[in-house]
Image (cartoon, rainbow, N blue to C red; front, side, top):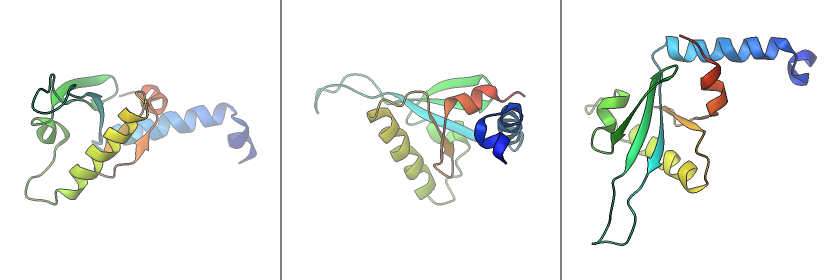
Length: 119
């Protein structure tokens, strides 16, 4: 355990395995990349999210297409989606542009962890 705490080579392998496991189970991640500017009723732009479904496989979608992109089931609870969107907004407002939000737990995952994952 000391080697892991000190950042030995085993920690790199463990992080890579964790990333691989995350994507192997079909997990999806999102982050907010753009919000409209101005004040209502003169807003300009769109609310845009980046969605990652596999290592390095991302696409940008607007807020109306976000549910389909992350695999949200409209028959289920909306609370998971709302929590993810609120967490993504908080990260965006804090300037944490490299962090991702796991759908549907709303857990914040550092971008470095996902970049280390391989398919």
